[in-house]
Amino acid sequence: MSTRYVSGPNLARLLGDVAGERPVYAALARSVRGLVLDGRLALRTRLPAERDLAAALGVSRTTVTAAYDRLRDEGYVESRQGAGSWTALPPVRMSSAEPHVAAVHDGRHDGRHGGRFGKAHPVPDDPSFIDLGCATPGAPAIFGEAVAAAVDELPRYSSGPGYEPAGLASLRQVIADGYAARGVPTRPDQIVVTTGAQHAFTLLAQVLVEPGDPVMVERPTYPHALGALRARGTRLVPVGVNEGWDVELIAGAMRQAAVRMAYTIPDFQNPTGHLMPAAERAALVDAGRRADAFLVADETFADLALDPDAPREPPLAAYDQGGRVVTIGSASKLLWGGLRIGWIRTTAPLARRLIIAREPFDMASPVLDQLIVRELLLRVEEVRAERAESLLRGRDALAAALRELLPGWDFGLPAGGMSLWARIGAPVATRLAEAAERLGVRVVGGPVFGVDGVLEDYVRLPYVLPPDTLRPAVERLALAFREAEAAPAARQLPAYV
Image (tube, rainbow, N blue to C red; front, side, top):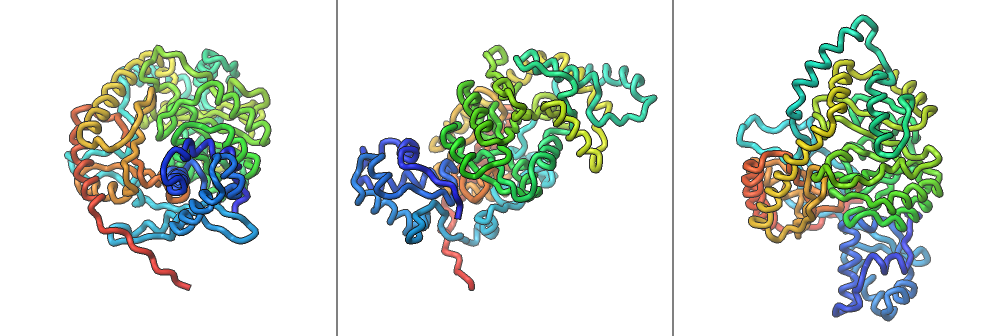
């Protein structure tokens, strides 16, 4: 059983005012169930004793006992005499519409669960098919000019071997200057250029953690980061961020699990779109210091504010005094996904370790791609403005279509990033994704962005496509949602010994 626990006062804070509803025990059970299903209360978290929670909520112990009894009957709480009670999910359910959901409850998923996702699953060869599974745009308007300038520069490098394990010095200087402009003085020897952000994170996982080490991840979060950590053999420690970052709970979980590393997306978080406030950034760095853990900050979306003139939050590294914050950057979302260039900002000693560690499987990143990225970063404000204008149109068009055609879905309007994170009002995201694919639109269900089978009532909806494509996509989603809701009720999967 997990060593994680939540105190009575902390759980009461998460639950809010359940005492104002009637019957109170049912409202309390419903609220705890909701915290489990949306990932804010991790599975296998030990719950407070009935007396402690009753005191924190200002209700009778009998009320809490009745709520815990209902949750046990539903399968959301398990108990053992002398060991207490802890959160759980009900036994695996399966229907003819859910042939693969069993993989969810042991923390696994394949490309089918929650809808096929990732570029290993190309869209059908049908021009009418709409892909909402990929949140990345085409190249910016100045791309051709950047390519021409890079090609002109290429002869300066082509007479040499072409292997620069740390990355081209000229690109590292531009990246370092970008951090300095955001208030984080950085030298080029603190930058390691990688072959994309996924390569950067996989390299960090190889260097910073060992198999079996606990690693904190947000829930929901970027699925391929979870894949890299699973491949490394780490133990995932999820913390819910559907409502933003609860740093007090995060800090407690970091201490309890003794995490070695924490992975966070503080800028327009993927998929929720949340932007971490400055005070919480400072508190998170302090929590990492107290837990003696590295914080890996993924800034892939940091330049994608929909108002490019809005004040920017300082990078997480701005609050770091001990070299614990390691930052990942990427060209894929801001510039173009076809430029497989990312980077890591860290201390110079760790940068040298990363350079050595990459050589057995990736000698260096492509020179021409690095030169193109450098040219684009030198004109980054133009690119940011273009992206903001296009994404804002897409966001508003998608939101308008959802409000009209799927009024029961709940979502916020993010101030940046590339997608809406929509709560669909029923735990049918996997069936929805399957039905939508049959109707000609790909969408990724919430469980893909989690660890252990929750988030079935969420979907991620990118708004990178043109507005006149997004509306028909939502029309198809509305049909798929009605089909998913009308699917046969799940049945209990029989137990085998």
